[in-house]
Length: 176
Image (tube, rainbow, N blue to C red; front, side, top):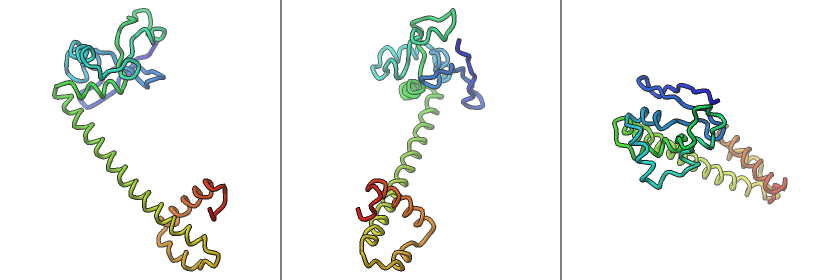
């Protein structure tokens, strides 16, 4: 039987979750409704009328986990996955769901900013490494010139990492 766990979401809100090896945790419709401060019927209605919710991805039925639920398990009871809980937050209209959407919006924007910063760093590293590799390809390469192009510890780290990746890709042949 699954052991319920209490998860503190905010100072004012604690929800009960059921640990699950496939989805990390699951929540009953009643607990999701409590979390969003709406009725369980509201949650069921969103599931019923909205084809955005996919069984096995956003929710599962009790029959799928009945062996871990105990004697009072209802085979058609719905258990929400994290994906389903998140997706519900975009359809439900309540103060808590508004807070959730604000949080999710901030999280997504921060994530894309980090991705953009990473892409810029990656482009710099690739560009810089190509320059260095072009220098390495010359037979009469001036090692002092290469040494001078490495200005910071970060350059050294970027170069070393890129050079190792390049060597691995080209099976150790530094000349490509």
